[in-house]
Length: 259
Image (cartoon, rainbow, N blue to C red; front, top):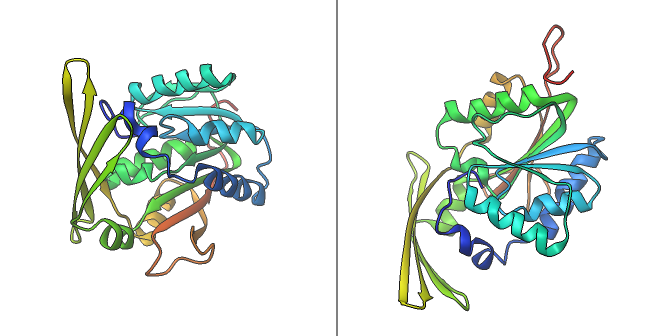
């Protein structure tokens, strides 16, 4: 995730254990292979604790993970050690200003990481960097929560989730005019000295597909298609999670990083 997770990072995997990482990873691999990306370097932006990253490596890709949160990456390293995973490069960078040593075959950014980029100019920066570091004919696959998701699933609601070690309460405030959703998280957990509390606030923005298409074009990327994740068909007003596939906008005379 590209949000700067701090205290919540330690509990992220614990409370996100219902995310269908296997299904999402299989779908991402199918999209990559559908467009001819069967192997090579793939970079995941907003990789978090690397649940997707490690699955894409297992599918045969050489993986790089980028995330702004040191705490999330530290958990990923612990996971790699415990599971005997080697060969994944992790970079502690902001996706709005990341740097790579060369180009990659594909970028992946899922688990609604791009919804955390709430300013259009910042999102354009991400897209421009993706275009700069993509190989000719390289691919960009990313997902987004839609306004339908925020309105129907979150809205102005409060949720509570409990694990063996902690209680998570989170309040949502969605503004349909700005399309900003504010999450106020409160985590209560036991320590030797008694209960402790973590409070964090996170904000996501819903983008329209037209806005995304315009930003991709402005960044020099070529829009290929958009898919409703649940139906695997063209998105409509009821789409809640949108997958977008774009390709490198190769330009004659452009200097490509790494070749």
